[in-house]
Image (cartoon, rainbow, N blue to C red; front, side):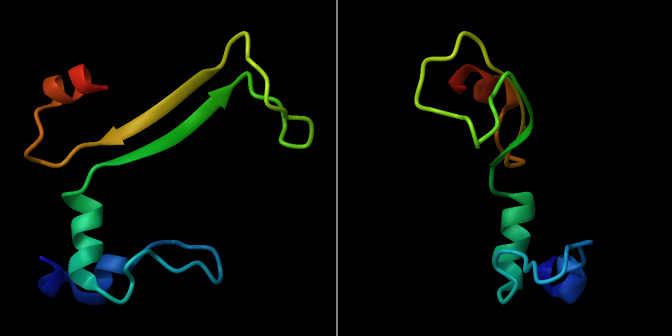
Length: 82
């Protein structure tokens, strides 16, 4: 697939001077986008701004994450592991 897609595999809407990871290796870029797991933090509630943050125990924090699983991973098994 990486060979078929070629450079289009890296066709993202990126900010100026941002370079995709593995931009020089299409196979690695393809594997990272499809077969490798990833965790993305999509939102956080209850954290102080970094300018006033400190090393303290928090009363509460709410985090929303997105986990991409490899196609061969069973979602129920992944949930148990998490």
